[in-house]
Image 1: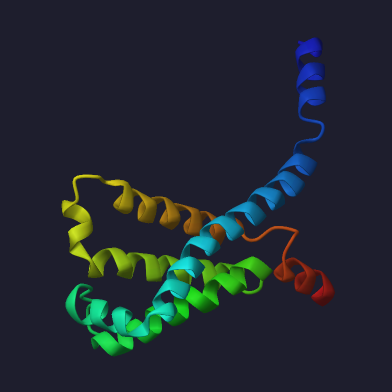
Image 2: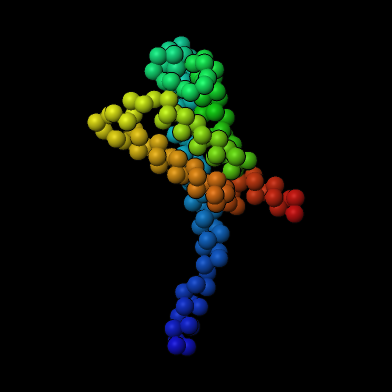
Amino acid sequence: MKTLLGMHQFSTRFDAAVTDWGGSLFSLFLRFFVGWQFLKAGMIKLGDWSATLALFRDEYHVPLLPPDVAAVLGAAGELCLPILLFSGLLSRPAALALFFVNVMAVLSYPQLFSFECPAALNDHFYWGVLLLALAAFGPGRFSLDYVLGRARA
């Protein structure tokens, strides 16, 4: 029994450091990965604004919002919120807001559910899960949130 406890103690010796530093690195990767997906979409929307407006008028059916307002809010969210994720500033609210943008994208484009290839819908599902993980576990050490939290303490 003593040997088993000794082996367990040895194997868990660095758990706190691995969780702290490894989790921070993983969070950094997630912030950049998922943020980049939304930033690209926002840049495409901004690149051809007349096509974006046409899509929101004809294809995307955002509940409760006029198409022009939905286009502006969607593009603004896809352009601004990833910047917050990249920097790690207000990371949890930014992740939750991007989660909401993601949900609205799926709800406003019901054709996603009828495609032969489910990859587009799966991407939104994965991004949603990653954003919820960021909201739950935070941005980690490599973020402005962490630096500001330490300065406040």
